[in-house]
Length: 494
Image (cartoon, rainbow, N blue to C red; front, side, top):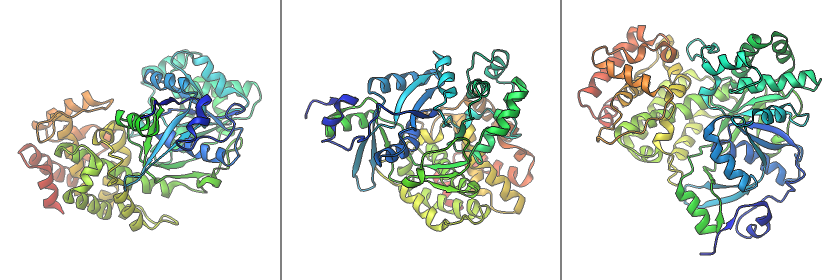
């Protein structure tokens, strides 16, 4: 094996003999996009789209500056700085083929935790025309039942008292927009790329709620000047494993401390409303539409909910990965029935999309043996995901007299998962959730009060008061606690 060459700008010419590299000049890039939340998904999706556009010789004014607002972002920040913000994207095909490419669209990275002023200044810069976000569902700081802004968050209270010392996305956005207004600069677009229905509308509502408490004049200016396009994003991007780093080093002789792996499929649907211009993303396959709502709902209720169905049930069964779930006929059949009988009936028409073909494609994507998306990743932060992906489908089916049993088993399994913290083989489950302690507490009370878990109205709304739901839920929960194997229970339902 050749000695791996460090991934850096100065080595790109030599690395170009091993895999595709940026052919554009990265040193004269203006930073037109500030992106908050630079995880694997952003690097496999938005940054990749911009890289493709740059490879065509366009969008030189649209370089990306990544922003980290959590201490956990420090590691990636340090690695990207060492690598001149370059990284390898490994597209993994079902047949085992791997297509690696070095991506160069990110040109800077700043940490808001250590130097908030540089982040505010970058957002407020005349060159910045879009601030985009992948801050996860939990980053929007709203009550999932009421949909209202959570002012009880201690970080939010701190920012209202100390507007010059921001912590959350809201503190940084208002600080930067206040400077732009004072300097008579145009507003930037705030572009959400998170898995929330009407994500742009939600960010607008939350930011205005915060801004009104901080500065009513600023809030009025934001309402008039800032665009918040809704968007739907899609590409399965597993957490980077050491094996991925080793593959790049051993097979391609490239030393990349944090490559990204993803599936071949990629999709981005965006409402074409921007405050201050945008890159010509349509030239690389982005779909601009008048209303992204139907596409968002389709993706959240089919793909994201489908992932959660496999994840929660698979975790209890002991399946390590999503593809292992789909390879099990019981899991595959159960998922298809859930999608056909509970999720699809409440979607309506989606222009240009054949829903049967779309569902077929999900099984092809989920079964990709080279992605090996971990069940643990899919289950992480379920308290933020399920109220958006799955629980609304249950509510809507209850309202129209539709089937709820397949989704309800997932909720009962989530209670069991949160209580036991081990699978049905007795192996410990790694539970990553901001509400894990609270979930464990109420789940453990379900032995005495079967409805304890679902009485959390911030997650479940009024499900605990619905007789049809509680009857189905308690029956399933009892079966799980009296020793029914999850796969046997699933099989009995399909």
